[in-house]
Length: 337
Image (cartoon, rainbow, N blue to C red; front, side, top):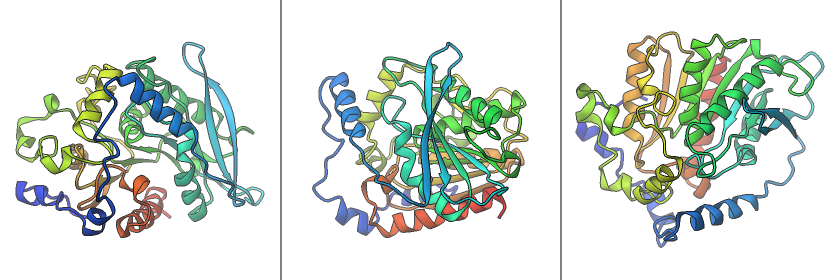
């Protein structure tokens, strides 16, 4: 899809999807938060720990452990095709969960991992990263980088059993997407071996207001657009809660990949998924253009009138069906299949 660049076109991306409007009537899921930050985090983590995804006979799933740089024991979920033929070449996707750096866990990547495996013979690895406020910035991104290096080093071994030279993608949704945009720069600058071949960024954040160059300010509208700040799944109140917990240096390139000091050239192809009613919409649109200016191959799918990561709360929308199809096609594009 073409990237809209005129303010009028950009603002219209938030025109509500009629099906979403009907499905969301009466919902105030995250608009009314507990007064105490820790109450919300504890409640949401507890609810997340109860998530059940059942069994999928087509996918083998297991857990491995790996050390962070400070010796902390982290874990990763591994998803593999249950009936891969001997000597089958299996690309690997490293997938990071969302949750504002404060909630979520690798197991929440299960539906997406299974959907990708049902379309391709690949291995998906979902590494853990430590969460704020117990572990504020930069613990999360450091753990994510340690996890990606672990996968690169052990991808062909018995723990993972992939062939990354046939495809090595990093990606995620929400915070996981934001992290992935940082990780691909680290991988380039530190010569990760084998090298990444693609990046998947679904509803990620790349550029805080203070970092927006003057030539793009007329396009940076979603942070103040009412429709985007009243998002059911990530509104301004919740965003502030996350930021107060994480305490990031918003001008650090480890938090805002847009500010990467060595630029964006020579990155692998990047696939964006951008929701029309979310706060980070315009930074994604701008970032896609900046990558293209740096001669990075970019593909972007835009979903008009739906909020941040809407497919989680609204799995039956036509927009969600399209998102599922697009995700498969986007991965096919990244793998050049």
